[in-house]
Image 1 (cartoon, rainbow, N blue to C red):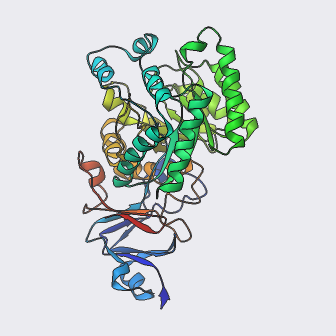
Image 2: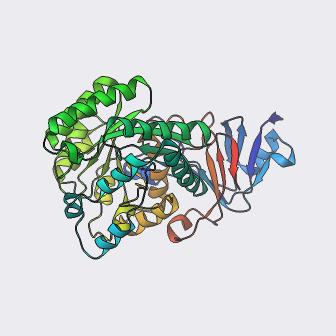
Image 3: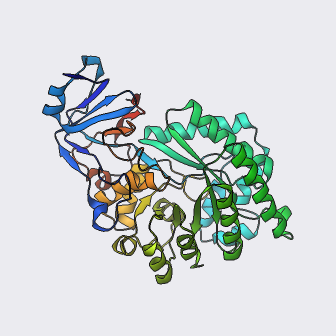
Length: 419
């Protein structure tokens, strides 16, 4: 017999999401879960050894009883990958959310100095320790809901010092917590009040800060919010090109409130992911479909949280052959949830995705949205041992059920960290 450090046994299903490590699943492949009925997973160190029928895996690998994790008829999945969050912040925006529920438009709130700028004021005043303590709390809640890889953006500083402090918090979390944290510099979130009359100077500041961040290895990705009251198409292109020259991976907030042409720009630049897309038009969709590696990251919790009628056209995007990922967009203003299971349930209802499509979108495709498809996001030999056990009888319950946490066990990097 071979040896293993952990065996996960007695699963009603193992959804391996296998076969898409080198390229994200797209079109009909978005529904291919690689289900193994009565499956099991063998783990050695921080790597997966084997996925297969429980009888075969149990017979092949010798472990002591204390190294067996009993799935007890539940469903085993790759750990969720949350590829779009704003998890480091101070304060809250409950009052603003209530105003939005009463019909006040977000862009009006932003013009009045609210919205993102409210969080900017609070975050600028917060110390590193304060930001770290609050972010740690929310990161633990992500972990409890099955997330083993999380992207964290800056963007609530909008000045050199606070942006760097936010990214230092994200890096500290990556070192101390079992989750894998991927940091993104979002200096191009909105233009801060002190630069309203000198936008070009703020663009210069973003670029100079980006150079420092890259030199200090504080972030892997660079992101821009292209939208009315944020950054124009021309400004977005300038910033993305500058970031690419510095060696950043590129991301983009696009087509959230208007069809700006940002999706087509991002596709032309070959960026890693384009996020939101509630108002993508046919030209933008055609450009995305022609792109070879760009992932569309959809964020249905935003629409739910804000009571918006317009959702991203997930069915059109998937049918066009564009790989789709899902994320929480966890932030204090527009999506105050750390729960990927809730996002899956919302995607089935609001975006008309199947449960299988939504699972692929929160595992292997989400990993590709962070350039991590060869490392995590599926249960395959050699990949990092990030997996969860859900207390449900089959995978469809992830869409069918909602409002409670089905995750009972989380293994991150081969270590049992929840349950």
